[in-house]
Amino acid sequence: MQVDLGSLAFAEGGYLLVKRAARCVPPGERISVIGDAEGLDVDLRAWCRAEGHRLDWQPLPGTARGRAYIVTGAAESERWAGARRTTGEGAAGEDAAAEHPPRSWGLAARGATIEAGAPEFDFHLVDKTEVWADEAPRIYQQAAAAQWDPDTAVPWDAPFELDGDLEEAVVQVMTYLIENETAALIVPSRFIAQLHPHFREVMQVLAVQAADEARHIEVFTRRARLKRTQLGRSTAGGQTSLKTLVEEPEFAIASFLLSVLGEGTFLALLRFIERYAPDPVTAAVARLAAQDETRHVAFGLAHLTRHLKREPGLRPRLADAVRRRHDALRHTAGLNDEVFDALLLIAAGSWGHEALRQGSRRIVQLIHTMDEGRQKRLARLGFRPAEAAELSALHTRNFM
Ligand SMILES: [Fe+2]
Ligand SMILES: [Fe+2]
Image (cartoon, rainbow, N blue to C red; front, top):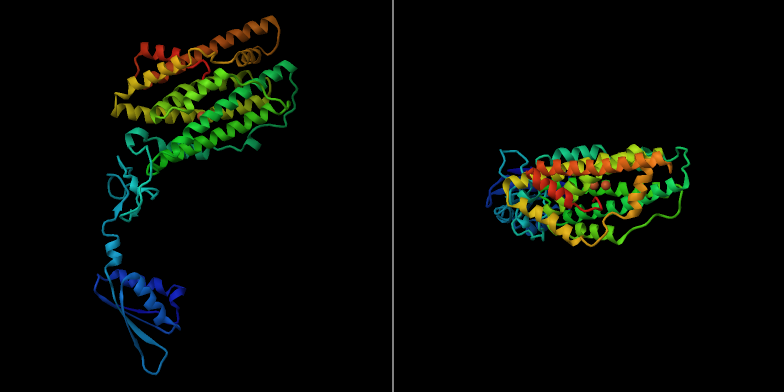
């Protein structure tokens, strides 16, 4: 095989032509290279030394040109001899995730050929059963397409002025929502760092989920500060409840408590706030957040359904987690009175007796809707009706 570089210098890309030719022949075979570029012999010599090839340079008498004979070494082919493709057992060409990707596959793109001897990464979530959902690619796509701009999606300039107490009620609810959204941002973020990136779509879903929560925090904060400079109250009970979520070490249990039970309950809450919002800004931020939460709940249900199918023993452990959390929070107040009262006033719309009566009925209905939703989702995960009812009743009074 012969490579004619003409006037192309080695560093200008000539090396790529030589490299390609060297790859085309088995180790020990000879290729020849000719060229006019100055210093070609020096460049070739250095390159061959680095790549483990042998070089023979023969000047062409009477010219600046020369001819190189390169006998290729085995270093390049040996380097990749123990290499593996980082892919699962799919049909040829299929981008399938492996059941147990080795930690040494590290950050490599799924499907890449990985050199033997790459370092092991300290990922904890390395089993497909624990994390995977076949719906993940679709949920990620939908999430990426549904990102909204907090600046333009909310009618921040819509003119309105609420009665002082009603405005304060909205500020209190926003204050409560912000701390809950913060927990919802931290939980998936923690697991992203533990997840084997081989499960690319799951990593992407969790990343967009965290980005969603970042926007929720932004719009709830902006609504809270729209007419006031001071935010509302944060209680010890509320934070104690969220702390149990933030500190849950197991992915399946954390997703169950956060996405299925917590965010599931929040869907009803956000729709309630949207429906009875006293102003268009509050309605818009609640609607936009609920839209994203639907996906968070859907992913939680999807990977837990798959996980439970492969490991039914997980179900009683999930149930125990709810009971344990309930026991841990037994002596806390749960939802703070301020939030409850604020929701009631928002649902009533005014201090009138009839309005308050109607507001109270709406709150009772909200609690019922939340409970119904939780039981329905628990049933989807295979819990029997009696246990679903029991677990739903034990869910934190803080809602999330
Ligand atoms: Fe959220
Ligand atoms: Fe969420």
